[in-house]
Image (tube, rainbow over all chains, first blue to last red; front, side):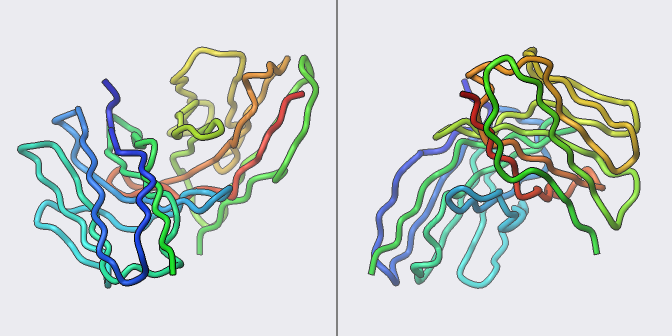
Length: 108
Length: 112
């Protein structure tokens, strides 16, 4: 079983749509969680941290459910520029464990 | 502000040739440093990490090695490249345990 699992997608959504990604992690001791965004052939960039109480950054909302060991990312009012791969990340011992990513394609 | 430099951006090397990729961080001291590889269409695989000069932890046994000769310098090497070493190599750094990593712009390696 992978330590961090994501649906690879792709998710094809029209501009303005709301889209949600889920991710599960296997290590119940993980304490920190993140979402990264990776554009094609570029390095991953930190999108947002994920806090137990849930947190929002503009159109992006992240949620953590420790009991079920899953993390979610909600994107509202999708823009063409949101097209990218979104990586779910959990902190293991001394390192971050990355999921394989969920690809999002926003079309006009 | 902190910056991370990684070079070269692209590299084409023949099978059996040596490899040396360098990563340097500016604007911070005693960073944790990481080497990841991303094969085409695959996820990020942690190769090595270092919490201090001369301290290297290897995650995956393979024909790659890493060294940290200076506080803010991390080098990935191979004596003889294999075709399977092709991929996108990413260096990353962090300072605190509870923050995310910042990645360099990566080196796209093609072994032919």
